[in-house]
Length: 263
Image 1 (cartoon, rainbow, N blue to C red):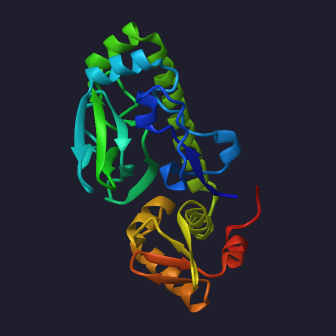
Image 2: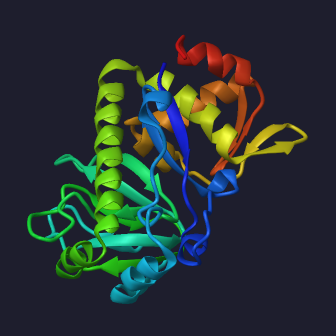
């Protein structure tokens, strides 16, 4: 069964203060599609292995930047120049095909980094990163990052673990897109958005994450028109209520049947 995982992230603010800071809320989790969330595990925080002094050394070398919703951190085809460590907000990483169709690889949140895989610079970005909400990040240029891993060896562990997880994530996404129908993916996506962002409503479970039809389409590998039509059909069957970016799930049992069998 195709599963949209929600993997807990470490809160960057807590990390910089030397606390073990597992993210307390559902909305603070990274969001991605994968066949087997148990096998994939959760995305590690870049700084989780560092002492308070080591974190301060790393963060002092970075440049804090603010990106407003819709602003681009890096573009597919542009040259790599280090990584962006997320402090606040949500960063969407996506690939754009020659046809201009987009597929969302993941949404990353505080504690994670984006901008790989060539973290020390050189080469070209294979995908793009954009702020899907107002975000604050710490930019660590490639040359600076290379020097830091020599000075703070445990930072290299966080980088390796992060790159390993991202590789597993994107491999699982490719497998999922090749083996599961778009209908199954949409049903599972809606169920897991309820799990992550669901708020009880008098009509059902309201998905409070404010995902548009285009956002859903980019996550399941479909067109916005297909998603809109599919949601309309589900609304006609009283499975859900869809009003622009507002979605209320009324019959999760039907969605569970649509997603197929699995773990």
